[in-house]
Image (cartoon, rainbow, N blue to C red; front, side, top):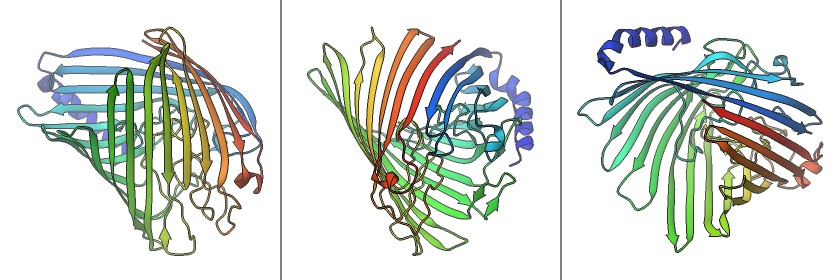
Length: 434
């Protein structure tokens, strides 16, 4: 699917069919947002855990055009402009894609239509994919550019017993100075079903990632020949006793398939369990306990690939806000406490204990980059601890500020293998919607 052909056909289809689809009922809405975020980092950056200090300003502007012709059809167009002011890291430091910069570009462009009198809906074009709490597909919105956007053909089947999405997707490879970007070489097929008529939220999913051949792109990024299937489920249950609200949610995913070039067999898994309590004692509060596992490879010399590869989900929200880890060869013990009084800033405290699942596999940075060579086992599985403190205040309905301080403390696994200084992350963010 060539990008120019895709968008040309899309625009032609839209222009030809707009009078028919919208039938004199066209309504258009324009809105958008501006996000400015000052960040100060110490002893790490988006590329590596390394001696490095920087302070910079991130800017992200989004402009949305929404058209609703009738109750069956919607059209959505989103422009994005992202930049970094005074960053030490420059474009030459990245392999094509930069997480800070995406000059004025089309981020989303899709048409959504529900077939009249039939329980079928389709959504075609460039769009975000997101399900439930976004461990399975998520836009990665904390990043200045956004981690995941897709060119998608999606059909949704609706019934009183289940809703099912079936789609084919190509992930967007954002290029900082190029309009309409390009794609990652792999294809993604998925079936995601939300089961109804049960006393809790229950979803099942199937995802197939396929890359037909080994490829090194012109920026030096390597994409292996791969067939990887993921099957799994998500569930959530809330219940209230007096003034106490108890919450539970979790997910399990199993991956299988193989790297065709090496004939290595994929056998990996990932899961998390999250238990929470909300209560009102002088003011609204909440506590959470979460345990996350992404399997690692216990024997790098055999023909099994046992490292979990994530499911295109969010990162910063789940494995520490400093973005030093991802859902690969990881055990993350997390405790959270939240002060939710609407008259004051909401305060979020998260503390993480990070461990390797398998000591003879890599530590994987949040980019998925392996940090340590196989064949040299870690002496300990304890990577480090992280404290995240966020203050969030809505000054008006369309204006929010955030203030955050985070600190990472390395432990034995890193202390015994090289650089191991504590790292800091400071954030001040203003977010305005119009």
